[in-house]
Length: 178
Length: 116
Image (cartoon, rainbow over all chains, first blue to last red; front, side, top):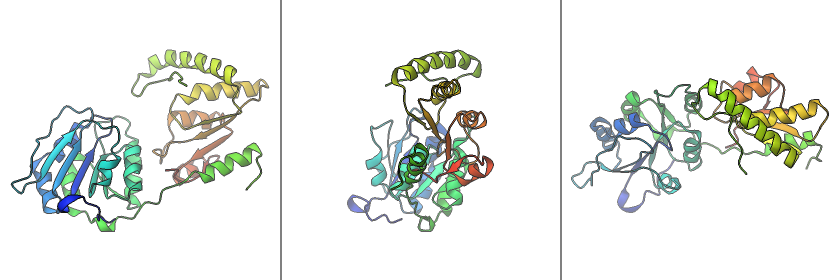
């Protein structure tokens, strides 16, 4: 999990994404002094928050005084560029966000939204965390996850492919095997 | 091409009865119009009326469509409601899951690994 493409002047960006959801608890905790200090301590310089439909507004900061530079926006048509220029991604547990990040080979902390009823999404995050492809946290435990994480120990995720399904379907429909 | 949803995320199950009926009528119209040979679906309740109709056609002898269902990659230990119904009622001709835990729990499913 290298971070060789960090952009100008050794910037190390943490990109936070909540997808199309409202996840104020995550945005709030990421904007807390505790978490910002921890990110700074772990060598990050910038924090960019995609806040989706949330109502909590983080505090912007230029970071000129040596503190963490903080910026935010609600939505963009594609977060791929933001993911690509990030050194760390902190995401809600949506499968789209998770796999888009893993396929780009970026270190990822997935934060599960405890306010969601029927939280089947957490199953995916927990399974991938067990396989060491990412870290899994809840808003109250995010700070200690950041403090204790070892990004180099994460196992790269190999993208899946649909060949197996295609073969089984073809076989069932009676198409000749290739 | 758009199709009506049986149920929106978070919609109450009571009102879902009506919206499912509407979706089913719409699905019936689409099935007759398109007569697909293959129905391939990946999950949310939207696919359920289509699969039921294709299945009923089969039962009465109209063998237009094979039905393939791929459960969502986000379903690791438990099936979605659509998946559970299609599996238990044996509506899908082939049922695919992306995690081994589900294949162990639902042995008639085919484990195909993560598709993403």
